[in-house]
Image (cartoon, rainbow, N blue to C red; front, side, top):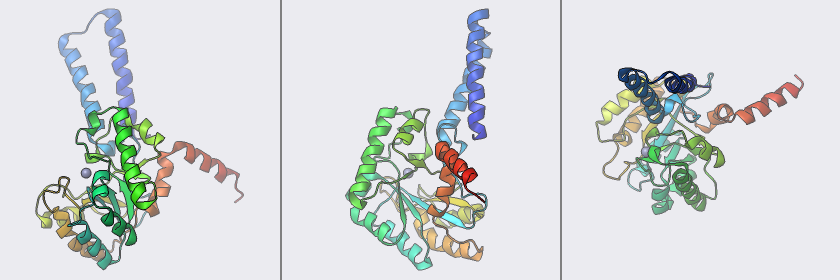
Length: 282
Ligand SMILES: [Zn+2]
């Protein structure tokens, strides 16, 4: 279990104990109660905002321990203007990536989705509507949005997406049940290009090349969320690919890692595999 989740459970038990003590022995001083409530709310907020802590959901963040190379992932597309530029740069370097696409944009630009697949890349879901307040929604809203996104991609590609990256990486305590029900594996990241907003492509290149090492899972954007600008990562990509080559880091398709890693996010499957490994003669 991720350390942050253990910490959160300990804090939750402590909160119950604190309330029980207050009920039995009378309320604590106001300042003590304020600090305790602040601490607990802070822990909940950290869990909501930082997917990499994996407090509320399991998530694939990097390749397995022995992974070689770097996985490139792109969010917020498809966009008929910028996604083809990313695809051309990837083709030129002869490497494969993963695109976490927004369902309603996919419906608008199905030809770009088909082009992504035709060029050998993998698709994941980045929600249907990219609701910025997704973390504030209950399970019903999550289920409706994700089901709509899955159906949108299924209609275009004939295949059900298996991977999901939450919009802005936010989650909440309700979502793990919905994700398990829809059989979606959550994919986070270990290096962010921070290219979702306007910025200089040189800074994006420097940021990615500084952060990468074997097993890194890089988050970039092939489109801006609201189609308002070209993400600087699009212009930076050819330089990033050349930089990776200089560092002798190959670009590895995420799917080569995710089967291993998804064992960790499906404890039941993990247990079954462990059993069959034990059973199989060596
Ligand atoms: Zn996004």
